[in-house]
Image (cartoon, rainbow over all chains, first blue to last red; front, side):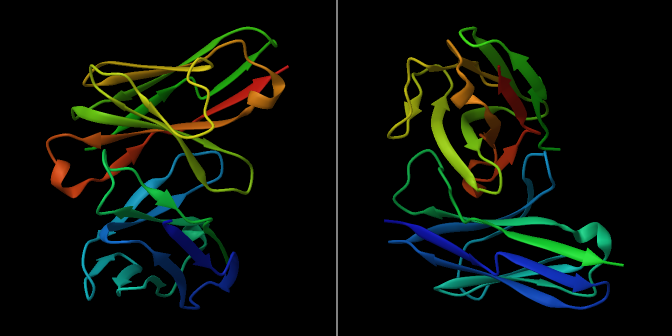
Length: 112
Length: 118
């Protein structure tokens, strides 16, 4: 069974305090790993997709990395507007129709 | 690009009535659309996968007669909650996969619909 575990469940940072979110996964074969941002009462917003170990993607203050067992979302010098829940999802190779398995998310709060 | 519109954003209905939620891909053709349900403080749970022109595939434990899904065109899928009861109250979110960009398999999400059944 495919599993996705995100840690920590919640993270509080001061503005400018860099940190990382973790996404550990177990799948029979990975087609892709996806990071989304979700604000309260809204649908997830696509951030990154990673397909192979060693791959990295960057967008503004965010950088996602991937190994064979986990992915990290690094947040550099965060701002209050980065506060949100960050969701990680995996798409196994065997899946049909591109279905995703989501983790429980990390709720990030950045204080000014 | 890759905008998914979901309507309505919030609906309140009486127990026993039916509610229809629409999901539209505005700037791409979506061969596959997905419907999720999300409870407070929890992650997204896939309810069903719908492919344009064919019957939806429901996840285990999801009643297909209660949650009717129609994907009649490449830009529109609808979810109808039939004979809604208070336990159906939840946040429903749709997503769509860009058929042209299919190799990337990215799902783009709508803003969600908050359903409250009285």
